[in-house]
Image 1 (tube, helix red, strand yellow):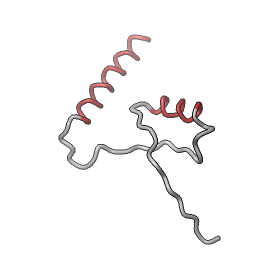
Image 2 (cartoon, helix red, strand yellow; image 1 turned 90 degrees about the vertical axis):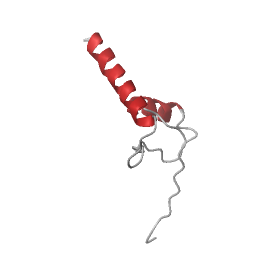
Image 3 (cartoon, helix red, strand yellow; image 1 turned 180 degrees about the vertical axis):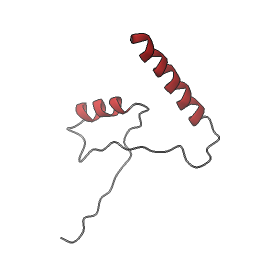
Length: 68
């Protein structure tokens, strides 16, 4: 075969990679060739997604510092 056609469907979205990996583990019976990838907010996105993501990132960093 010279080529193989792939169809990727976005099934679930996560802010945290570890959570995505946990999802892949407990849903492996439903997933065929699962993958984790970054889906950007888009070019010059001035909506609420980017500030919300930054807020979650800063909260997570503070929680990680408190654990140490």
